[in-house]
Length: 164
Image (tube, rainbow, N blue to C red):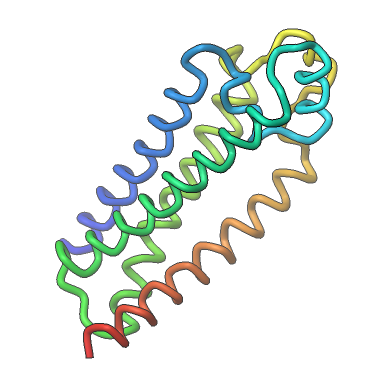
């Protein structure tokens, strides 16, 4: 039963990521250009679609709101809702939730939504596609997989200390 609950919690976190992206591109993909390669960002600035300062502000806002929000969500699910106690229960539960979000990000958002729809195309940058290159994908898979394990370990380590 706990595994089903963790899968549902991971799906909700993945949906929150999708929702944030949808809000970010609601007025066009330029709204999330901070997630694109530097060459795309430079082109968008050269085209006059945004400024370096606006890209920086959106990036800071995205990281400042989303990352803490994701971490709080995971902590609430694992410790408040699921009642985990100690390092290992918290670690594996957090890792499951974060890994499901990572899979949603890799397959549904990056591969399908960004790679196969027109929603993320920025006019004047089509020649720079694919926006997520094979090298980027490899890096995202490695960093996402290792990163989720590190985040789960740090969160469960902190909670193990706090809940002693």
